[in-house]
Length: 268
Image 1 (cartoon, rainbow, N blue to C red):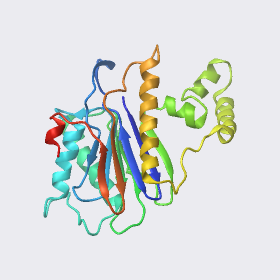
Image 2: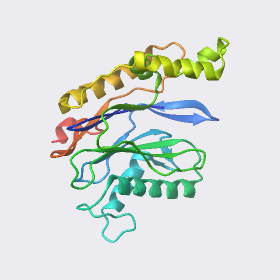
Image 3: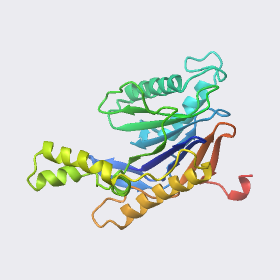
Image 4: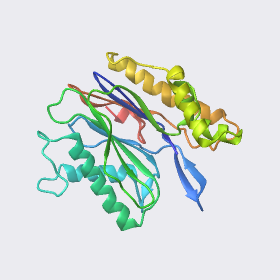
């Protein structure tokens, strides 16, 4: 599992993620590595980024490597996946991502869960959008726009519970806990719906500076990592270095915080 966070404001969208990736043995969490790459600039020079959660690879390739393979195809003149960098939409980009990963999944017999969150600007547009592509149980529904240009606020995925408790005021398993106490699912769901408006917390304003969106994204990842680390009962599926990127209209995709497998002195 993992934690990925996007924070969308008027000035852009911030992407943040941990670096843990879990390999399963007979559907049980086995080896956990803490240096996976989960954020990729999908097209060099364009304000488009992708984050991933779920399975860390398809076949013999990691999701990060596959995203970079796709990046090469998107910029390939005359290629099937290529698009015009001067005239494209985020919907078109999401379709390209889905097509590419469906092909790779079918070739490898992949039927596990994978989610790809695509953040960025359509050509010439003033505000970003956030889209998601999902593969699950051998199915791949059409890409979904989870935040249109007018939408604002944080979104998180992977390990939900810490942020659900802080922002929604209710744990992820609230309904299940009430059912165990004797409530019907309908009663429990209605109570959750009734409580939500009174408990939900807004953490950022639409006009906030991009630096504050970066700070919020980092806080959300750090808090989830701490929650999982200190929980006595939870598998330690979140951790490692935090990576953060910001996408804005004029600066495009920029790394804010990034790990490297070579000395920092060489990253100049």
